[in-house]
Length: 295
Ligand SMILES: [Zn+2]
Ligand SMILES: [Zn+2]
Image 1 (tube, rainbow, N blue to C red):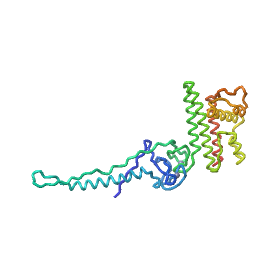
Image 2: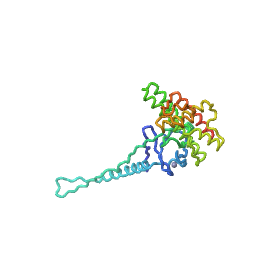
Image 3: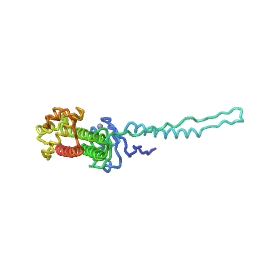
Image 4: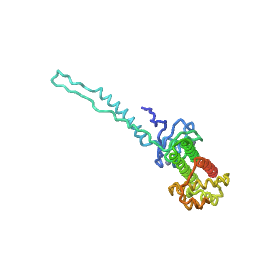
């Protein structure tokens, strides 16, 4: 006997998957991505195996419960046929009544995940924890793509906040700068780890990172960026540092690194929307350089 059943998906049509090796959860949309039966790549550890090895515990319990529900239902139906009703006018009478309910079905719902991704290489739609991972269908590491998606989102927020209340606007601009740089740092660290897992360079200090990469690989992350734009990058990274660690007040380190006047010491740092938008483009350029370098 065979029972055919379709797996429940989340409200966007994605089905849960669990890696048999690292046990981490992700979701994919069947029907998107590569055609034909292709093995599945774990987005986190890149373990590759057929899809039937990636069932989640909830899905296995669900399938078992559907089978048990069917069998117990059939059994109950058979027993019900043997029921005997008591005959009221007889001296001795007996009754057989079948009680019981079929085994319930273990319904479940798929979990929420942080990042929805559309693989530009194979068109698979999938969702993962964290920001970066391998595409479960084509196996490409899509950190660069996710980085671009995030940066575009920050830019969109900056544009949308144009008519906001000045205090709200200021907050959005500062957040966009901080988020863009930490996303850039996350992307670069992750990308470099694919090349050499022992490397640990902080890209929040961009000048040091650039020098380290030149020294180790003779690779310049700022390739194609002119002197004026490089200075803008140095300013922006220093401003982010002040916002994150010094309540946005200018310190001596900022003055030294940006060659600013001593009179600025202790004053609040200011950053404009245009400045942050320009920085997001320069971050994209540096990320692209790094992507080409590691590929
Ligand atoms: Zn895994
Ligand atoms: Zn793909």
